[in-house]
Amino acid sequence: MRKLITLSILVLTIILTGCQKKEIQQIQQSGIDYYQYFDTIITIQVWDTKSYSTDSNLWEGAEDIIQHIQRTFQRTKPLKNEDPSELYLLNQSAGSGEAFKCSDDLYEVIKIGMDFANTTNGKFDPTIGPLVDLWDIHSVEESHPAPTDTQIKSLLPLTNYQSVQMNDEEKTVLLPKEGMIIDLGAIAKGFAADKLVEYFEAQGIKHAIINLGGNIYVLGSRFEKRTDGTENWSIGIRDPKQDISSPLGRVFLTDSTVVTSGVYERYIIDPNTQKMYHHILDPDTGYPAENNISSVTILTKSSTTADALSTSIFTLGVEEGLKFIENYEGVEAVFIDSNMKVYKSSGVDSIYHFELL
Image (tube, rainbow, N blue to C red; front, side, top):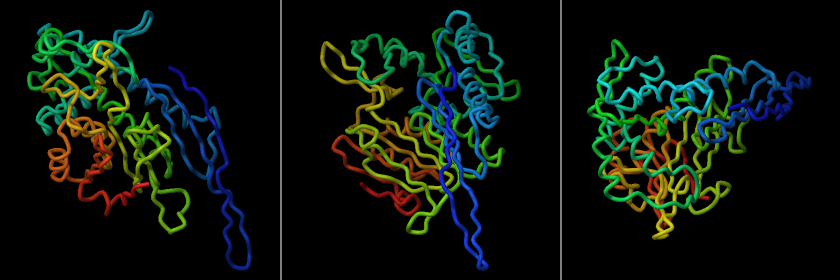
C-alpha cells in the first residue's frame, strides 16, 4: 500500500511581547500525512517549529513502521507476486507439530495477546481467527447469510488460547491443532500507534495526533492553550446512532489514547432474517456479543492495551466490564448502550473531564 498524500500547512503565528519590543516568531507548523493500511485511513498530524514537506524523512520513517507492522501481522493469503506475511506462515504451521520461530515484534504481540487472554479469562482470544473467517464481516452493512450454529460449534475447539505453546527463550510458537489461526486484528493497530508514538518522540516531536482508523493517540499537549487556560486535547466519542461527525460526548487528555469498539463499525445483515450481526465476537459462544452495548471506549496511556480491552470489555457487558476496569490500574472506560445511556468508570470525569454534547 502506498502513502496517499502529504500536506504541510502553516497553522499559527504567535506574537510574543516583552521588554518594549515585539518579537514575531513562527513557532507552530503542522505536517499532515495520510496513509492507507490495516484496511483503514491513517492520519498523522504533528505541530513543531519546523515544517515537514512531502519528501521529509519524518514521514518516510513513519510509513516504514506502519508497513513493517502490516507485513508482519497481516494473516490473509498473499496475492500473486507478494511474499507471505510472518503471521500467515505461522498459521500455516498449525497442526504440523513444529514450533514456528518468530521475529521479536511478532512474538511480543502474540505474548501481549496471550497475557490479555489470561487477564480477561479468554474474552480476548488471539486464536479466534477461524471464527472471524467464518463470519466474514469486513465492512459496514454487508449482506450475506450468518453461519449456522453447527458451523460455529465445529470451530469452537480451535479457539483455545490455552493450547498455544510459547517458548520465551527461543521465541517460538506452536499451534497444536490443524486449522488454528492466530488473529491479531484486535491489537495490531494499537501496537502500531504505540510504535509511532515512540518514533515521533525519538524525532523530537512534542505535539501530535495519530489516528489509525479511530484508534487515536494524542502525543503531548495542545500546541496552544484553550480559552480556559488548559492545554488538553479534546477528542470526541462517537454517537453510535449517528455518523462520525456527530459525537455524543468528548474527553480531554494529554499523552493518552482513545480507542472505541462499536457495533456500527462493521456488520452484516442476514438477507434471510434481516437480523444484524456486528463484528465483535464472543470467543466463548462464537457469536457476536449480545449485551445491549453499542460501544465501549477505553482511555489509557497504552494504545495496545486500549485496543485489546475495547474488544474484550465489550463482550463482558456493562456490569462486568465496569467491575473489570475498576480493578485495572491506569485504565478508564465509557460504555454506551443501545438506548444511548452512558456508563463511566470512576476516573473518567476526574481524569479525562468527560462531557456530553
